Length: 164
Image 1 (cartoon, rainbow, N blue to C red):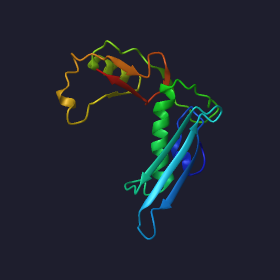
Image 2 (cartoon, rainbow, N blue to C red):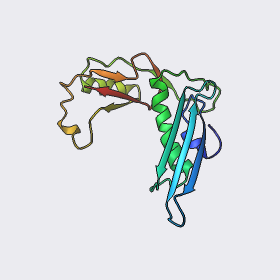
Image 3 (tube, one colour):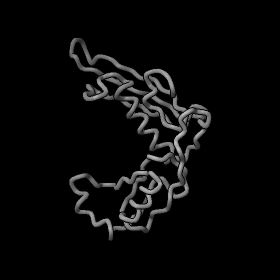
Image 4 (cartoon, rainbow, N blue to C red):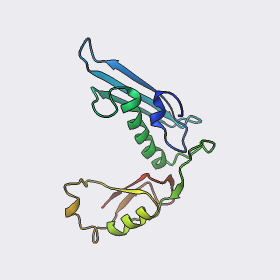
């Protein structure tokens, strides 16, 4: 997706099609409903995402392309590698560098973080928030599950989700 208001849903390496929308929520309410409907990959659609936001506020304003499309892009960036959908957009100008997901199951979270960081991926630990992260013993807590699975090729900067 290179053009139009849906371009904020772009995910490097994948061809995504989509449509954004913005409407008023009633008459003279000054509230909006924004949306993004996307499919991926264009060549052989396997995933449909619908994002609907009621009265969005913040940096993106209230336009579908500014707030709903980026959410759709984030969802696609995590779902497509998880479903092992192959990247077919090799002719696009901005192709992110791919890495193979390492097997971190059985390692301590501290070891897993080091390995993931070295290959420029991010680690997301299920159930961990900024408030409770300090209480987790990362040296002695072992990774029990990971998504995507080891061996899957994903773009640098994507997240690996773990359970302990």
